[in-house]
Length: 265
Image 1: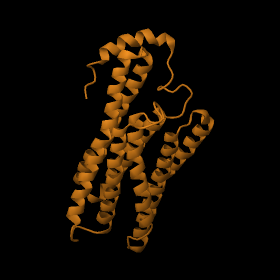
Image 2 (image 1 turned 90 degrees about the horizontal axis):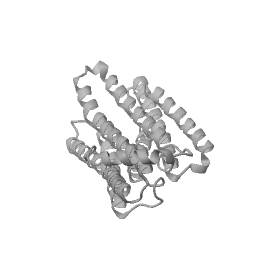
Image 3 (image 1 turned 120 degrees about the horizontal axis):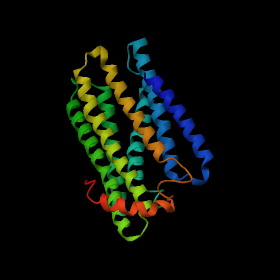
Image 4 (image 1 turned 180 degrees about the vertical axis):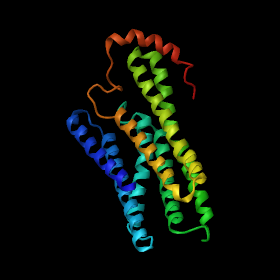
């Protein structure tokens, strides 16, 4: 299963590279970071597949476990960083980050370092080891902090777009951006809730022979999340952030008036 998903992600990366080459005039730094995220995700799954194969063949858990943790570290850092950067509109809406957005990154990146250290300790030891439970609690706490932190930039962007819609006279453009950020916010919430709460709870209900179903659900949800994000924030000439049709302007102005209380955070 892991090997199959790794092939899917590496094909995904190849397709992303083709899109970026075709639309190189509109490629931004964020698209390079997204490509790196796909690379490390695919490499992590390759190592996970080899590690389990090694356990099956030798009975010892030390195949490509070091590479697995290294690639997992970069994937975890890049995932939350990409979510934060997209949420701020960096490289799409603006070429810079505000101070409060930099503070979010200063929280998320060190937290990801701590989370990956905890993940290594948990993966390489067991419940009988000293401090194993403590590291589990640290892992869960840090994960919750990171998940909560990434919501703030998206919320700030939604609110700033609402305010801009009242002042800059570009209703259709703001409506496109606002709808995109709302969708992004809801997808991020759903993805984090499903992978952090629903899947672990589902796994505890399964017989050990069927634990692979929980991992399959986790990877399936992750792939769906990646497809949504990469499709909506791909480099295109008429990006929803930038393009607006003149004929849509008048209709959008009326819609924005109704948007004020339709989506409360």
